[in-house]
Length: 143
Image (tube, rainbow, N blue to C red; front, side, top):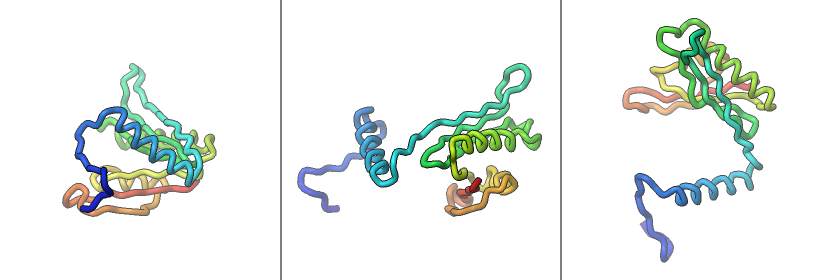
């Protein structure tokens, strides 16, 4: 590989915070010049039992008028009771309040593609063999 004079590459398992900040800040500045400020805001929705125990939750982020669902989990013994759909609906409602156009998510074939399809999400991408023999699927829904 030919690099410009004075440039070297290094693989780093745990880069220094200043290194991470330099890369993050540089990418953010480039993206914002191209697409405007992302105005990223977290979205958390938590499902609790009467005793306060966490039985499910959703972690998302809104940016550039879209909701990205990063995590959606429901305790195994409580699945199939509508908790996941309620978590997703609550996050989507908040995204609408934030004037979002829609929501997107990625999931694995062994996780919840059928769940998202039942919620009105449509597949827009997939990567076979992630994990090996499986599939990673990206789905979205416009509001």
